[in-house]
Image (cartoon, rainbow, N blue to C red; front, top):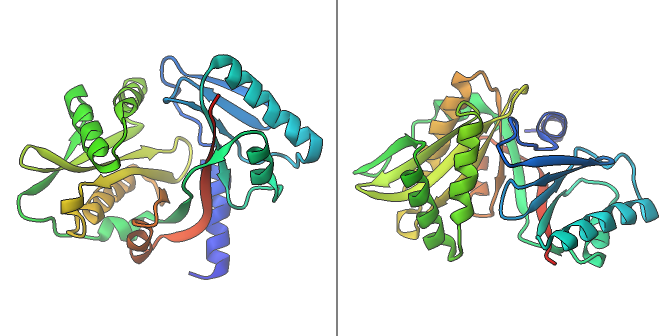
Length: 265
């Protein structure tokens, strides 16, 4: 890919994927507008702040926008995530967030690429492993338990969040597990961005003893085929340093980074 291709893919990501609002909006979720910023309440274990662009806000006006979010979530007694892209302007936005009490978490890389090559891949699963689409509460709990084993923290919010997305529109998301016997060894889900050519891939955590065996690649290819069946032509992933090399080998291109800046009252 050339630099021009990467820029074109980033522009497509900015115009079609961002500001990454739930569509349809699950029951119990509220979206509020504050200038160029969208505030999502009730979607996850913490609030979420997102935007396509800050429309040139800088200096005191930007600080005031940030301060309003801090005051609101302080009053709610609730943590909130400001999702900062590496190419967001102004360049000192991260510094301003830190000065207001937001703390950056681990940076991820946003990769984007065409669906067709991913869908054409045919990774070989280890013997005894199968992929299965799931929707039921017991399977969502098994996914959360697997993620808790991988990450050593509470993932119960996944159960409620994914269940509400399925309830709001079962056609907007597909959840896939990789199983070895009765054990969920990996899981991922795909969201089909309404009104766009994009699908986005999420999850992908894999139990340590099952890594480097083709399970993650198989989950990516399976979900890419689902995207292709629904007419999506581009796929986007916010990926960790572990999964980035795999996705780049499969043809996805790094277009920016994303960092969660979290304010906790």
